[in-house]
Length: 426
Image (cartoon, rainbow, N blue to C red; front, side, top):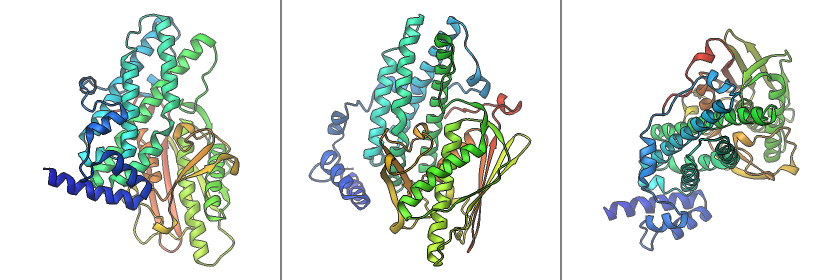
């Protein structure tokens, strides 16, 4: 057994070293013995984690209570309703975070020891312990105390997606594509559900105590202006593309005023990732052809019976094979190795970013922007975001010309959509 484990860990150590000497060296020196064997006890002590805490197993065995759009939009106007809402959200977070912890436990040992995944694990355990310590929610004072805690948790979780993106690249070396896709999908879906539940309760809390709307990009907004969201996301994405490649295409937008009931953070981040991919492809293709004038990225908005279809067209050369299947995989990228800029840190004062992407995760903190060009994470992330609300993304590539992306989103105040369960147990 030790021989097999040593072989696996040495292989993974080399893989990490190839990914980056600093990551690999830190990983081996801190968490592995001189003979290449892992030291889980030292790992647990360094993180302050008990890897086999039965409390998480007990909570993870409980059922997640799925909810509808209508649940998120309920207004809790009485003291009793507000306390019940706080108690419900608090319990659901405990169960959902416990399930994420158990999912990490279920990974192959070599995968679970990934440094980025261990950082996520440590974060989940710390949040779980804080929630366990504040389970008694009876009075309005209890609600105020726990709600402040929930607000802190919402803010502190901003860095989870960047760490998960880095972890997915490493995990693709040691787990199957299907296992990786399933694991990361459920991690992202769980994160979305927790943020929506917390933001919904914070809105009710703010209305009850301050008689005003709670401002958050994680709330469902009735009349999001798609043209404004599109332009903001395009400006942010092209700032990143220009920073890396020295040029960026313009936007050609169907200017018709189209409104959509949706979650701003998810919509803007989806636009951001799709534009970033399209912009990079256009710049690289036109440079290859020796052309200085970049063709614009075209966007068309088509209202449908229950939502909107967003068509994004680029002249980035396309690919010989259809990308729809590959785009679902977290280890797939259209960026060649020499062009990758994995999680490049850019000072925000060096570029113009018109809106805060915090809740969708590119901002690591208030001073820096982290981008994921070449990580193979953005397109699957957009897919998960769309499918969470029963939407869909399709990709049609035209070899030698470019790519058409069709993002089909549901209107979240539609009479049919609002009654559908959007958060199945996972």
